[in-house]
Image (cartoon, rainbow, N blue to C red; front, side):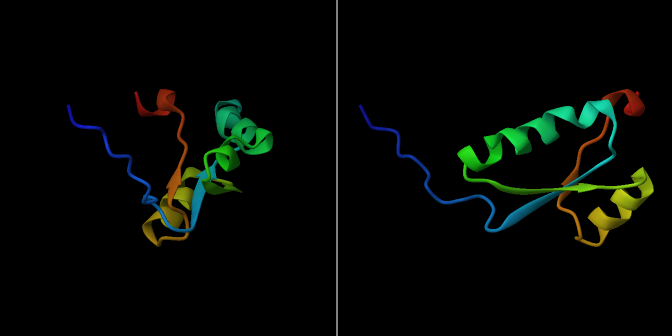
Length: 76
């Protein structure tokens, strides 16, 4: 039997910047940040409160943000 080798190389070197609209559906990200869950997994996350989805779209397009959190109800 072969042993599974663990990957110790980080997938992302640096800070992960996530944009969000301050609505109730952003609570998991805000709570995870406040409770230190990202830090516990050695992930440096910066949450960026934005005023509109258009602002988030533009900032992701121009690499100001790495990603966003969107309410799936808006996508249906």
